[in-house]
Image 1 (cartoon, rainbow, N blue to C red):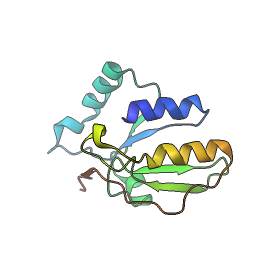
Image 2 (cartoon, rainbow, N blue to C red):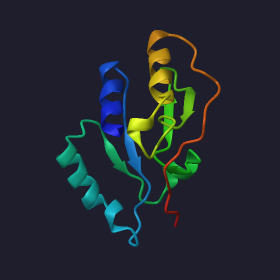
Image 3 (tube, rainbow, N blue to C red):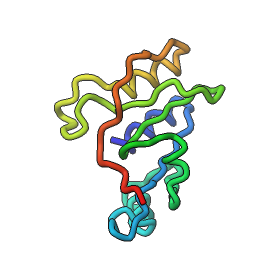
Image 4 (spheres, one colour):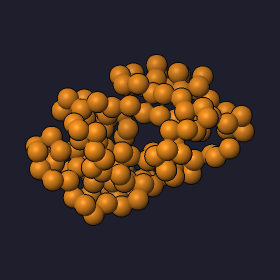
Length: 126
């Protein structure tokens, strides 16, 4: 989903970056090496950065992965929430809040103020 949404955003000339705060020796699947493998395997065309000391995650008060932040061209946060209404089963999604927010932002329309918390795996805090 993240790759598809990243490509969708780039198609609307929006910048995209993914940041991994889960660099923890107890969770080797989230290691920088595994990140590089994922970038190559999936062909991720946007930066996928390491937040090794979790400074960025703490500054943004991130709670889980993915935790979505959408900013307008002036750097104002206009959306912070979930990707859609079913993080476990993509086939059961009925509302795509992030995509709607991106569409509104690109069209110069207001982004809905009613936003739902991100859903996903908890950040492995150190």
